[in-house]
Length: 148
Image 1 (cartoon, helix red, strand yellow):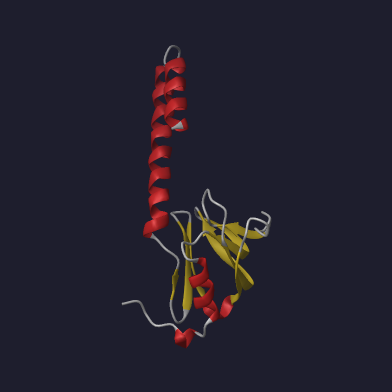
Image 2: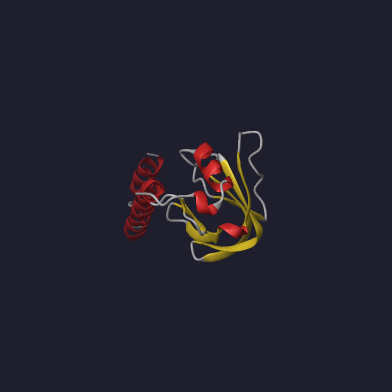
């Protein structure tokens, strides 16, 4: 809603002096709004996946990385008290919400975020079933059966 209101107000103000600039900024705001909606929907359509060999981490349209299970050092549930601080080596992959699961790797992993590579040691995720995810990650790989 803020984008819509701000865009309309800015368009009205700028159109008096620079009509082309008003329309250019309106188009950029519309494109941003479309991207945000698609990114939000991608969180549901592109889930985190776990199979016998690897863990596929996704955060909407921002990044996707496939990590061999052998490179996962730790998986733990988070509360609001122990959410990792932002900094080098940490990637918040939960969008606008607080992460409820942290996945730590045995060694830094190169993750492309919007096409730019970043070395990441820990990823914070927001999952629907954090208990089930932590249990599945702690069980041996051969105990996981593929989804029907």
